Length: 306
Image (cartoon, helix red, strand yellow):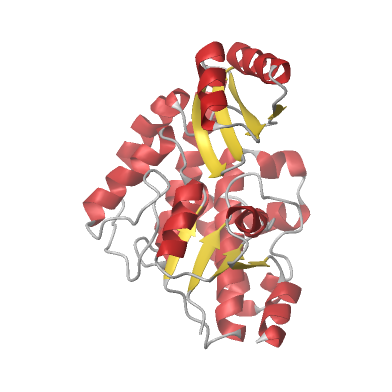
């Protein structure tokens, strides 16, 4: 019997129409109703119909991906009640979804956190223009040279072959030029700003005030932490501090997945839009089975496969 880890999508996975088929189930539609009450706007309408530019706003996108990911998880549990997960993980905002399913925060509290987190991150992006660049196939030495040459820092260590750097617009342009000169593949990302970097310090400070008013509990099963690549502590106060650090520190996704494998995980199931993490897992460790639950059809496909 395989040891399974559930993983949850991060920002950038959003797409108009997401979650619509899950909401045909009245119990799952209630998640969107509850979200609308917390957020004060029609999240379901934005998720199901767009427009894309509205859904892309960080304060909309972050709660939207969270609710759709929870909807996917609930639909899966209903259809596959015998499947259990030994641990959870999530990329960036997805880590909040992982903490929610592990019982650390309730649904409404997680929504409040993510709306505020998205808003504060957007404000930080607007206050100091910055960006991100994806570097493919570079050695650790080449990455270090690119950072030293351009002034960029590391935001995401996704796989052994893909790292995301962050910096000012000028630093990103310098990094792209240096990568090109060195024959390294580099793609400047279309993002609002440099997430998981020093540029998000104002967002981290504002989020601290919001988290002061949110109740955290000990997780009911292990959750992997982006900032360390290892498991969260059981102490709710430490989890809270770790999640504040996550705003400004690098995401060690490769380490998270390697920790899961060391702990015996042989299968990951991703919940939410996009399926990016399942595809990434195939580049991290081909021996680990990876599935993505993005809609009702994919739930059914998993159930049929047994």
